[in-house]
Image (cartoon, rainbow over all chains, first blue to last red; front, side):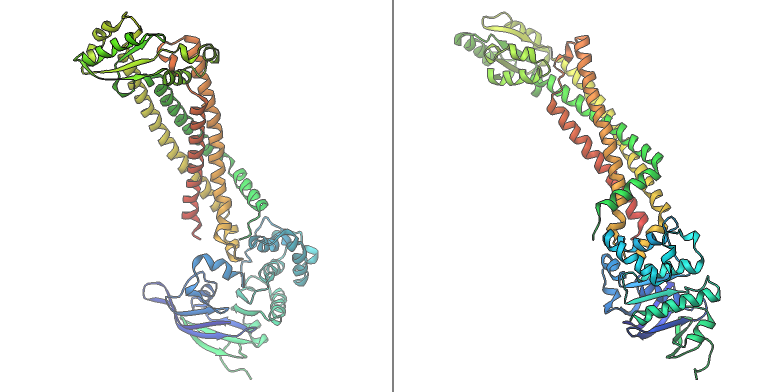
Length: 230
Length: 295
């Protein structure tokens, strides 16, 4: 599903954000990407979303070599990938329903399709009763659920999450995590960059730890701190 | 790419309304500059019509009687061929003269209907080696049997042409400057629109909107500004034509009596106005989109 082969990426001359990273993520996997700020997590997510291209090495996502996708095809590629962020990235002047429907509208789906699918997905994320609220009338956790609904509405193969619980209190964060787990169970691979020790330790999923542009650790059922899972 | 008309119309109208003052400024600049372009074109066409007979360096017009006999005609031709100061001459027959007449008096249908082709004088158009000899040569033909009238008023015609070409230059120059500023204004309007909606643009890219899907509403915005500006300018061109006609009729300016703007001329001018308006509008927005959308 995702394969990086000896990937290098630098933004400033001589300073590498990624230094020869190789990894493979299978269909339906759930992966935590951890490591200190500046270790290369965000760069990796940017490469996977094709917001940037690698300087060296190759990045394969959903069966495609990203270096070979012409820029006009990038939008079509992105429709296979859902993404959520720490700051939710909702449109403030649109309701929860409209924010999710927007993702359908933008790829040319009809209003009828939206009328059918959007309430379903909002129900799935537990916001059926708050469909017509604006983002500022929702709590942080609820806003992130809207963002997840928007990311998932096109049934992506991969969901990229950049610190999705970073702005949430622990209890709300767990709500979001349970939602991501449910999405993962439908077969969507989830790659989540996070600093949340508690979540990583309790979920016991694959952990990839980054350190100054290299993979420091890759464990199948890992925890946040050093040490091997029992 | 599945662009729905409804979506595009809604987005474009929304953008225009959000930046209505700037849009208005861009539109009016286009309107004023295109009105100038239009009037320069009309001026050019009017002058061209009124000086049609003097084209090609003709300095002397000899109008024959419509019913002149063959021998009278031959006498004139013989003189034209033998006089040493005549560079060349050509004959304009009744049919061609009638065409010119119809064009010249297109705005006076009463006159057009009352004159038939057989009543139109054919003419000789003469180019002289030395233009200053026009009056003396003219005298030779004036009053000769079969000759209706002689006209060597070309000096005034030349002055008219000169003034008009200077005026055209100045007007077109102004219009070009204004069109450039209109382009910059539209570029700025679109830039502001994109900036104020960068969050939306970011989200659109995130969920996989194609570049054209993002671009088209912005480009249509500039297109609309250009089109509306052209519409105003088109109205202005019609008004200017009416004003010309009124002035000529009211003051009976002799020199300008042939200053006729046919519907064809006006139509061509309107087409130019629309094309330039739309091109300027779309160009401004295309530039802005390219530079500020970085898609």
